[in-house]
Each structure stands twice: as C-alpha cells, then as structure tokens.
Amino acid sequence: MPLIRLSDPSAPLPSEITPQAVYLDRRRFLATGAAGVAGLLLPEAHAAPLKAAPGPYSLKEKPNSLDEITHYNNFYEFGSSKTDPAKYAGQLVVDPWTLKIGGHVARPLTLDYDQLFRIAPLEERIYRLRCVEGWSMVIPWIGVPLASLLKQVQPTSKGRFVQFVTLERPSQMPGQRTDLLPWPYREGLRIDEAMNPLTLLAVGLYGETLPKQNGAPIRLVAPWKYGFKSIKSIVAINLVEQQPTTTWQQLAPNEYGFFANVNPEVDHPRWSQANERRVGEFSRRKTLMFNGYGEQVAGMYSKLDLRRWF
Ligand SMILES: Nc1nc2c(c(=O)[nH]1)N[C@H]1C(S)=C(S)[C@@H](COP(=O)(O)O)O[C@H]1N2
Ligand SMILES: [Mo]
Image (cartoon, rainbow, N blue to C red; front, top):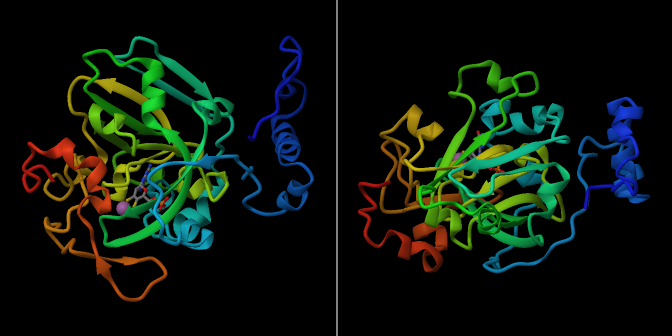
C-alpha cells in the first residue's frame, strides 16, 4: 500500500514541517523501499506496489502489455490523441486527493488518498475494455466492487442513479484549457448497474497504483459498456434521483446513449460496431454482446429495447 502512517496522531504532519514536494518524494521513497530507489528516476515514479487477491470474473485471455495499456489512451483532459495522455498526464498531482460520496445516501463519506486503497480488500480482475471507436484491450485491473463502497454510504430510496465526476483542474489538465468537451467529464449508471458485482472502482493495474494516463488515483470500470463510461480520476460520486446527464450524451445524444452497452447489433450512426481490433493485433475479431459479459448483466436489460436505449 502506498502509505505511511504516523504513530502519534498528535505529532505534526510531515507536510507541516517539510516543503510539500520534499515530503511527497520522501513518502514515495519510504513507501516503495529499496526497490523504489531506481524507480525515483523514472517518470512513473509515483507508482507504488499494491497487494491484491485474485478476484472473480477474470478473463483467461492474455492481457495487453503495460506499454500498450499506458501508451494508447483516451483521456481528453490531456488531449484528444491516443498518445497525449502518456505525454502530458505526468503533471497531474494525484496525492493528496479527495473523493466525496454524497447525494441521496444515509452516510455521506469523504475519502483522502490513502483511504482510496482501503475501501475494501483489493482484488485483481482481468477485464476486456471495448472502446466505442472499435478497438479493445485486456487489462489486469486492481480494485474493489463499487457495490462495497455504496453499501457503506447506504443509498436511500431516492438514490436511483449514480453520477460520477472527474477532477476539474485546468492548470494540470491541458485539455481542459480547450473546449474539446464540456468540463468536468461526467458519467452515470443506474443503481442496479452500479451495484452489479462486475462494476469495479479501480485503483491500480499490473500490480501497482494506476498510471496517471489510466485515471489515477481512482476510476470506474464497467466492462460490458463502451469504454467512455469508465470515467477516470473521479472526485465525486453522487446518488441522484433522475438519470444524470453524461458528457458524451450532452455532446452528441444521437451517437452516445446513457446505457452505452457494448452491442455488435446496434451500429454507431457513423460506423459498424460488429467487430473490433485488439490493440497490438492486426486482424479484427467479432465484438461480443455486452462485451462478453452477458451472463452477468443481460438480466438487467430484459425489459429494455436495446436499439432504442443504446
Ligand atoms: N475523465 C475521463 N475519463 C475517460 C475518458 C476521458 O476522456 N476523460 N475517456 C474514456 C474512454 S473513451 C475510454 S475508451 C477509456 C480508456 O481507458 P484507458 O485509457 O485506461 O484504456 O477511458 C474513458 N474514461
Ligand atoms: Mo473510448
């Protein structure tokens, strides 16, 4: 775990007696130990090892390489090209961080950086991610079911949807200094989708804390939906009564629906969704209904016309 506890809670915080940059570096050094010494010289120095037990629903497929997962990204806060996040996300400060969970809940909760890693025991889950653009990857996430966080805050009967909001910090997110998207990035799930055991809050991948370009320090992973639902660098989770507006719906409601379930039979207005290219491969493969997760999720949509509610 990427954290150091002070034994005496009344003692001054290291941040009060040391300039913050020095404190962060020292903490990082202490957290990663001897193995971290070399790591401090690398741009990914912030990554810290995470212990996770194997979780359910992991694919038996071979994951994409760490290099592919960290150099072919969509994270418009850092630009619209696939290589922009790897180039520019390094400047994002993710520790300290504040995640607020509120709205229609009995017990609102605010988590700091260290607490993000202690919501519940960490699990490794190898999931497929299918981008609406027609490519896919297999990623060994580390995280916890979103349900385990929601059970702690206790949604009330008015909490019928869950809204997620990304950090808005244009000084460290160059894309937010443009009008590429309406900021901050927002997403949403119906409460049953949010409580589904597949739905993950990821805090790491490949055994370490999340690379910044993948949504550090905490992001959503809803693997049966197109990748844009899996919102990165979350600062707020709100339980709301009405279906929340989402960024892509707001931008192009005829192209991106609220549900955004992966569906090879319903084409995007401008291209087919029948097949996909796995990043790193040449030939295309067939896209699977619900991205292959139908057994876990199809029941939630039995009454829904998936052509209308795309
Ligand atoms: N805040 C935020 N979250 C985001 C995006 C974004 O631009 N901003 N892009 C989405 C899209 S389109 C995809 S495909 C996935 C990509 O996740 P990855 O880069 O970790 O593979 O992140 C999603 N989450
Ligand atoms: Mo995407």
